[in-house]
Image: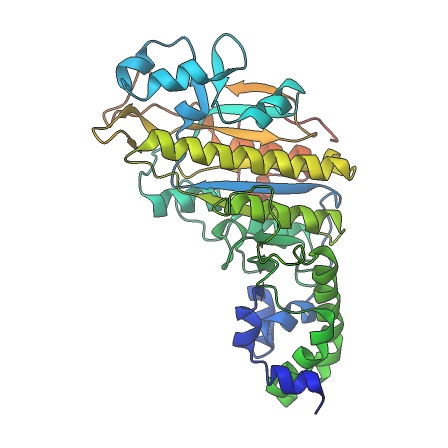
Length: 427
């Protein structure tokens, strides 16, 4: 037994998962009879070469979890009804907003995104929502993740994209959730494989460890799968090597993960830094998902939302700057999403309750800068005190799928929707 084996001891599948590198094998692989092969290997056994998507485009989906307040993100500058609905929240929002034009301004903390807007690299789609909205976090997240307001679809729209357009089983870094511990619902599908990487520190396997990992998992693999083992070890070696190359260790003497922020509470800045490293290293990542939590602002919204907008701004601008410096920005699109907006009227606790429609931000070189869609009318609220959506969220997904990835969105979304041309064709 060598020193590495003595130090590490037998590594179980649980150890592999605990180390922060999760490779979830797709259901097709399991149905094909590979269920007993550990997940880290199974995705290499059932590799299928699927065609159809442009291989050089990257999408980064940024979840603003909890329900982002659209009226504090894209601020109406001339609508007096905003003050009537928000007697304490509206004044600082309007007075400090960063004007985009005479009608709207960005939140005061979005300075970097405002600079990208000035360069034509930000598109804002207004009034995004869906029919018969749910104000339940769980239900509305499911709608956005699956792309199905009827709540019948189980698989995520990005998971379906992976399954139909990529060999994610053979190349599990194609779809990646950064800063997460579980696969986002948006990326789940029976036929897709997603890598989930919490951070560089929790990714505990380097190339020197690989032999011990292979040997320990081999000892746990039933003999019936021995013939398959050699064909899958190569895929594991490649994946671990790519991660080790893409994710350099933190600065000497520091345990802090690489980040675009000096604030350790900004987990989005860490996740996007991780995503940028994967892109720049050429790991083949194409679909990334990251999350910024804390947007369920039922009370004390002003300070909490201000901080979140600052986190969002420094994370996105840091990511864009680094990717652009490497000459890769022309292929990378960032898009925000949130399960719902906030109610136009503030509550007695200085916050806002669950709403419906809200704006989405699309950022990057592929974007045609400007405002799209129509701002919901604050003078026509429904019985719940909410605005009515003006743009179906599937129109946003459709434009991403068809213009950014060059694929037929109807095969992913199950229909056709109003065309929004916020992306440059072929960009």
